[in-house]
Image (cartoon, rainbow, N blue to C red):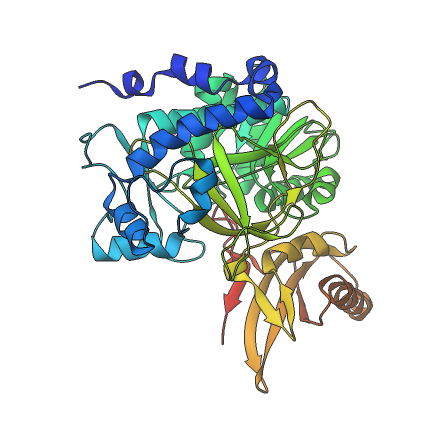
Amino acid sequence: MMTYFQEADPARILDEYPIGGAFMRGPARWDAAMLRAVRERRFAVLIRRGWEIPFYQRLWRGAGIEPGDIKGVDDLVKLPSFSKTDIMASVEAHPPFGDFHGMDGAEGRRSVVLHTTSGTTGAPQPLFFGAWDREVQNALLARAYLLQGMTERDVVHSTYGFGMVNGGHYIREAVAHFVGALFLPAGTGLETRSEQQVALMRRFGVTAIVGFADYILKLAAIAREAGLEPGRDMPIRMISGHLGADGHAAMAQAWPGAAVYDWYGVGDTGIIAAEGPDHDGLYIWEDAHLVEILDPERLAPVATGERGNICVTVLFKNTIYPVIRFNTNDVSSILPGQGGIGIGFRRLSGFQGRSDNMVKLRGINVYPTGIGAILNEIDGLNGEYVCRLVSRDGRDELIVTAEASAFAADDRTALERRARDTLRQRLGVAVLLELTQTGGTAALSQIDSRQKPIRLIDER
């Protein structure tokens, strides 16, 4: 039996999915014909593997698809999409792991890495990785970090969680295996106290921070509470994380002098797209993914520029867990045209909320995960919040509990009015607002213990 790294074959990975300068000289410069040829070849391998998995056999035959019907990438839209709901149904019907993996498939059991999702939107989902696809996704994340300016000389502070979730392990592997920077695996505030994280960052001379925006912003606040000034006492030069809508400004204000970058991916797929130094959308790694934007209700592709669910087919996941038309329920859109740094791939506008976490108020769609960006722009608030969906007098209401910075008692009414008016203007519908002190939402959002804080609690 081959070892994990013999199966992964890192030399082949870097040949097929180059990073750094090799990426910019190679896939970034491919013309449409070259990109299509590579994608068709990889797609054919993926579809053959899909037909060996019971989950896909059942899903595809249920839609009237038989082997041989899918002849190329143009036929992708004939296949039904699936979501986490379908995966969890597979797990329930075939415990404990479901039948969506290929651990016992036609090619036999190979090296398998098991993690789970965080459970932010429900029960944790098992995630499976073969050696090949695990290391490809690590290389693709390193591609993003290198594009954004990370080097082997950086000291990288990571706030991604460990335990069963994939995040912390995946990020560490990408940096250690393919970037070569010095890596501090601090994890969440539950794993390493926030105050201790700030102290470690100063002691070890951290130059880059990676993680989810909410907690990275909190670390800046913790530093200031300790009498430190981010940018001066903690000269971070680079931050790469998950910013959401309009997240750059808040991060740049919290960490002056740092170049701030966004990237997008989910546990099932690894990194899908990353922002480059032009800060003009997120470049989709189109040599590795087929990305569609689907109407959330009809599940049909929408036009360029229209918002919808990100649906992903992962071209390199052809070992344990093939991912073919996975509907993430994350909302985004494709930007028109090309970016300005010579990468010929399409660009994603970034994460704009979740369609399955959307709240409809008086006919207006509100995405609770996007409210933080609005609150960050309001003087007197620190950007931390929790939304509660309640039913009052026969209609749904959204209560936004937002944390205020220190303020005088006579300023509270003016701050409440300003925040409420700003939310109504930006969201297009009125919401209820409650102010609380700094740290007042932490117990509900669980920001110190979760990779992704809870932003919506349904109390109906």
